Amino acid sequence: MIYPIVKFGNPVLEKPAEPVTVFDGDLKKLVEDMFESMYAAKGVGLAAPQIGISKRLAVIDVTFKEDPKAKLVLLNPQIIHTEGRHTQSEGCLSIPEFREPVTRAKKVTVRAQDLHGNWFEKTGEELLARAFLHETDHLNGKLYMSHLSALKRDLMKRKIRKLMKAGEW
Ligand code: NI
Image (cartoon, rainbow, N blue to C red; front, side, top):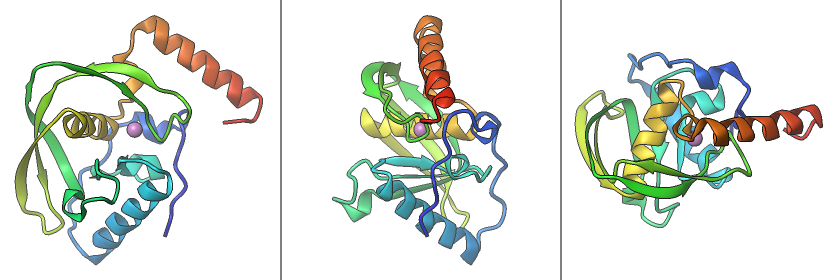
């Protein structure tokens, strides 16, 4: 099932999500649906709040279907190590049509649970590191615009408000 993506302005995107505590078939189905929804929206990462579900769950595939082994499910993720700095243009499915350069750590280690509830650690660099940080931010109610200068952030919000008024958001 493909879920519609929730856009900026919906409060679910700006509140901390609830921990995942039940690792069952329903969760597995939700994860499958999230991958399907992410691919349909042409994204490489998707957090549950972005489909209106306030749970600490995110899916990532920075290869976009090229490598099945690159599919990552992060349940209750925590960033446990960051290193270096890297600036790259970043977007978000919940803020369509906008992109801005964002400086983040270059190398990131995340600790998370898998679908069976087992904890694992994974280290990524550049795009994968960025995805770990971007998606974990989502689960904390934080959007990438919070990493921009106040000036750029206000400009982006003004443009979005204009689109909302025009019924184009
Ligand atoms: Ni996003």
